Image (cartoon, rainbow, N blue to C red; front, side, top):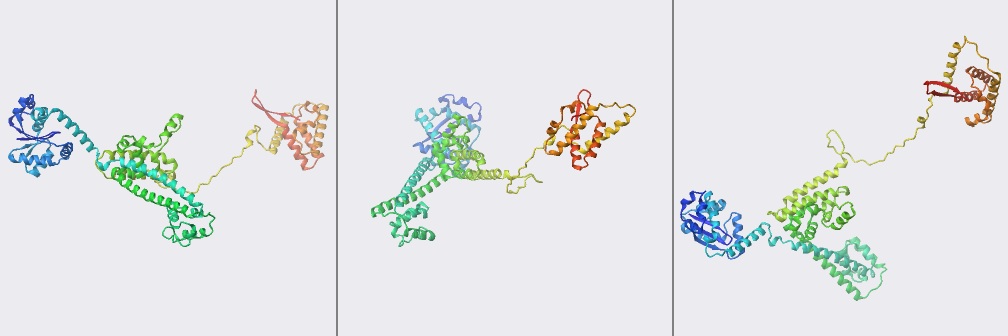
Amino acid sequence: MLVLFETAAGYAIFKVLDESKLQQVDSLYKEFETPEKANKVVKLKHFEKFTDTTEALAAATALVEGKIGKSLKKVLKKVVAKEAHEELAVSDAKLGGVIKDKLELSCVHSSAVAELMRCIRSQMESLISGLPPKEMSAMSLGLAHSLSRYKLKFSPDKVDTMIVQAISLLDDLDKELNNYIMRCREWYGWHFPELGKVVVDNLAYCKTVLKIGDRTNVATTDLSEILPEEVEAEVKLAAEISMGTEVSEQDIANIRHLCDQVIEISDYRAQLYDYLKNRMTAIAPNLTVMVGELVGARLISHAGSLLNLAKHPASTVQILGAEKALFRALKTRKDTPKYGLIYHASLVGQTTAKNKGKISRMLAAKASLAIRYDALGEDTNAEMGVENRAKLEARLRQLEDRGIRKISGSGKAMARADKYQHKSEVKIYDPSGDSTIPSTSKKRKFEEVEQQEAAEEPTTSGMKPKKPKKEPQVQGEQAMKGRHEGLRCSRRSSLTMRISEETPETSAEPETPKKKKKKKEKKAVEEPAEELKEEEEEVAVMEVIPVYDIASHTKEHFFFN
């Protein structure tokens, strides 16, 4: 039996001298305790050493993917084919199947073979002659680093340094273009100021200036390739009545040279943008789908590299570019910023102001996943980015539609967005609740007093009525006359004025109901007019004030003049 053993330095083919030892799997390690014992079990037949780390990386990569590399195929054809009748023990069953299909060699993989591989690795330095231990450790370390870089896809096609330089150059070109165009408009504006208002586009303005030169050439110059017909007609009309100053041919030559520079820089910027777009699609396709080429490139440039950006959490990606505002907010204990460079993404820009914070947070979470997938994943497609973007757009529609939903039979019907009309209800204060006097009409109050007097007459008929004193009666009659005179003179005077006209002696003794009745009869005789009667009723009712006796909880009537 032959054994295929892979090392960092090359491939080794061993021949098993005693196959009976393989049947005792549990005690096989005892046969490899010393180099002498190990040499009695297996013997090195052939060793194919790698020339450099690149060949070792290619061989290791082929083994990881279950394929046969060029060096392995060469070894198998050279050594094993001579002894095709013997079995070949391999450490990977998948690799054994590939060898069997392509080279028609019988391969074996079992638990005994795996244990044999472990035992050979423990005595590898003594079994493989001509390989110093230092060289073996150096080869192992170099292969490990190379294999790790390969797994992380650190290939020349995925170098993100080009993206960092390209986006920085693009920003610099934008600044220079703005300065050049502003200088060109201001310079040529002294000669033809009306052209700047008619031609708004900067590139079209420079091309127009480059073609016409002096404004006197506008009438004979065809601008149909640069400007629309309407704008061309306005330019020609403005040139005839221009208020600009005359300039020399040397000035026009310098202005034309500046216009050449603007046009060249604009063309190079467009070419650089296409290059950046292609590089972003190749290096970070999922991030490009989520936030766009420019925003994705700025995020990579701000972090330093795609791998550094992949190490950042979603919360850091969200505010990346707003560090100054973040530390200012932390220092002043105010609200921290909700977004940084990610604000310029199309998903954040198309939402309303109140939902920008939510969308930027969700977009940062999905973008961080896309960045890690692009930096550390093996696939180069953008399926995950397209799927996550679709989820974010659905969530955005849900947030935008939440404000115009209403409760209906199904609970999901959309409300019609009617025009808002503000309706304010003005409530007027009601002073009727402030009075503690019972709210009864004057006529009804006067009738209740009369009924009470009529009920008291039968009870007092058996008793001899006391004769009232003449002085109070005379005084009461005089007070009543004075009151009538005051009412005739001024109906607008208040009750306090009427009471002030009375003499102080009138309040010496309260009037009895009988006196009141007599006064009423005299009033009917003396003043038959209806007006006077109503005024008298008002005064009589106002004089009767119900008062509660707190001690006896009974209502008594007190009469005041």
